[in-house]
Image (cartoon, rainbow, N blue to C red; front, side):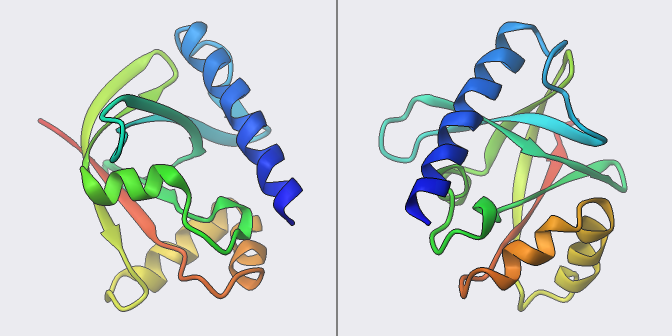
Length: 144
């Protein structure tokens, strides 16, 4: 299992470099899935950290899912968002400053948002089955 998550990290880094380096022209789609480049501030380093993630448009906001492929631990980017919810997202060539809200299973809207995410990418359900960890949903609200 650890090998799989290490592969995810490496591929994600390469994807992020290509996405960022191309100004969003390359890497904004993976198959039919829209991909955003999320920029967080490292909770330990204080440095800007980029990670490409599947993104789902929802009511003029954006959803990202903290699945990490069903890993038993939260992805580092999620821990950064918990520490500092002020983020930036690149959607193709468009860069948006946003505020991240974490939706947990105990929140009323979790099930509705989870179903929306699964309707876009069914793999989220298999990730959920692969872990005992609660998979958070993050709502990114663009700043005005």
